[in-house]
Image (cartoon, rainbow, N blue to C red; front, side, top):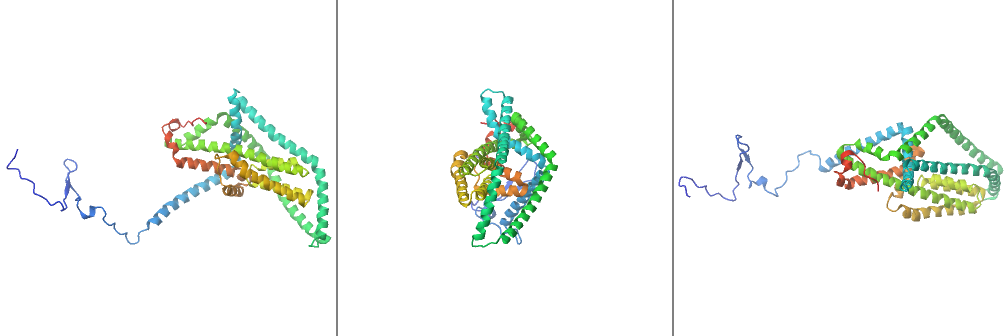
Length: 415
């Protein structure tokens, strides 16, 4: 229907920019919007040049990363300081965690065979005490039995070394030899005084050692009894949104730690048996204590076995001579090569992946910061933290955001 009094809209040029008025809410004054054809709204228009004195984008990104890294470094330094202040509590707790990771497969195996849970825990703890105590008793008895023979062979090696230096190209006289020997004795005496002062300090801290041992035993028992409940409590300390990530990272880290402990037991046993057999076939005294010492030291990856292997080579040099020492050195190198290239890939698989260079630096840094405990805990801590960070970064924990752990913090059942 045509209304003659209604005026038709005038034709407009499609290329001319138009202004659109946005009425907004009822009663509000109209707000003009930019025209769709305005030059400043067109796509592909050049960006405005940066203002004079503006910070380059690269520096902005570097600064943002820099202060965040400083905050992380400060948190790590504060954590390290706090751990050093609480060393008498932290070290027993870490030892208890390692012992629990070692004994949990035994407890699980006994429980699957319908053994009561508390009986399985008692049996596992008693077996550990019997094994460790038996090794210590064996070392003491072997050292006591072979001390006389070792002393006689040591004196004979001393006389042969003296005669060799007298007739060697060095042409050392008895006076020069006694002078060098006196200097070595003075150095040993100074070192022994430091050792005795350290022993006195340990003796004065015997009460702390006993308390630490009891705390380790107490923590191990409760971790074996109610480790799931302890983890439940730890997860609930975090915000609800972070619980799936914490729970998944903790489970992945625990699986890595148990695999690492089992691998280290097998590797340590192989090192001890291999080097002990070489010492036995060469007729060295104290072959059994050497094997046990290598076994215990191998729980410090790489460096522990190297140091004890060097001790076996020195013993062979003093007692049996340079030829047997070279054979012992070859045996130590052969054992380490078989361990690194055959045994570890076969036993470890893809469960624990830590580069050997990272292992060496972790042990060195741990021993520098915290001594023997630092060297012992450096590699398992690095392996566990590595897996936990990878799990959080992978985002697999988002699949269980609505699961039980996201609701009440209960960790899922271990496979």
